[in-house]
Image 1: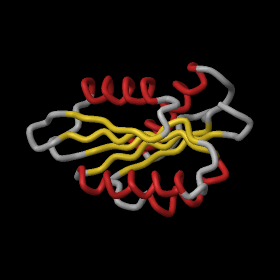
Image 2: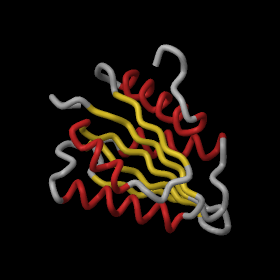
Image 3: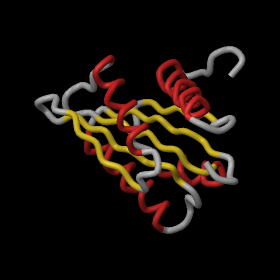
Image 4: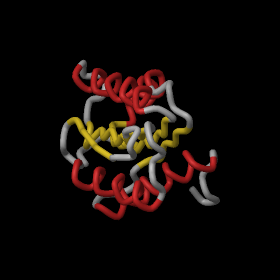
Amino acid sequence: MGDLEMDVLIASYSSSRAARRDYEALARLRRDGVIHESNGIVLVTSDESANVSAEETDGGLRRALVGRSMKRSVRDPLPPGSGSIVAVFDRLARSAVDAVVTHHVSKGYAPVVGDGDGALDAALDAAERVATTGSPAPGD
């Protein structure tokens, strides 16, 4: 994932409009160089008919993030009209990311420790745990 330490963000939204606002703010941070390195920022939304769609920036981890987000949506479907964001970004940008991700119902961060898909999966699991329970599991 490069030389920078990376973090994962998972945020949930009661409306797809709120999710889009935060997604666009994250994309602006990336374009403006505040986020120095990103391996993907994915927006997953569910319309009023519960049709799920996804879009992304950067594309570095699009398939992994979108695939995981879509699997999560099947396991735990997004309510109609809601959304979520999954992002992998350099830790140097954490305070800026936190400042623009403001419309969420819940959110969780976790560090990516190590390299490879296993490290990313563990970080995604940890961020999801923080987002859903409000605290990391013992040992995290």
